Length: 212
Image 1 (cartoon, rainbow, N blue to C red):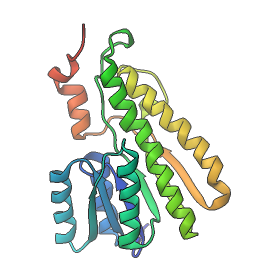
Image 2: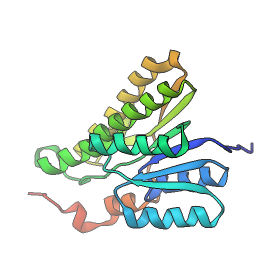
Image 3: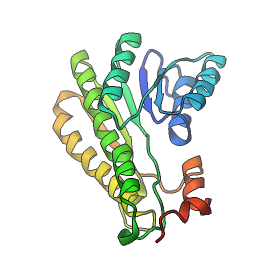
């Protein structure tokens, strides 16, 4: 099946690498207007150049997804530039410290992971939904959760907690807005070859942080 997203506006949060980057390239290749968003300026500028070079249409808005003002302003800029948001892919996430047991988990790492992985999804949906409702059109939101949000494992207490939270948040939000033509779903992939997976599973320095 050949999907065509011409004239659709797709907002991708967490576009600098991995699933977000792949989604940005795929949607742009199918004619969508793409809004790139994450904290990583360098990688997003490279991605923007790649999309434009291939004939795509995109903008980049630097955003800290854990910051309310940043997310609100980013969605506002997307609306100012393109006038609507049809699809939102919320894929921003960090891995924390896999392999660290709960009793040894560092509080700062816990806070960082929950701020990005769970609070960030909530803030993203908060302003995406407001924009979709204001526009009065059908919207689609896809949250990138994880297999770690469906079953326990050794990905680390904060990562599992955040992804279980994303699944629950997605289900409740989907029910809230089903009658308002906004579909909300979560995808729960297993390990995919991304820079984050590389850090989580193969970076011994990362895995040894705060083991005491």
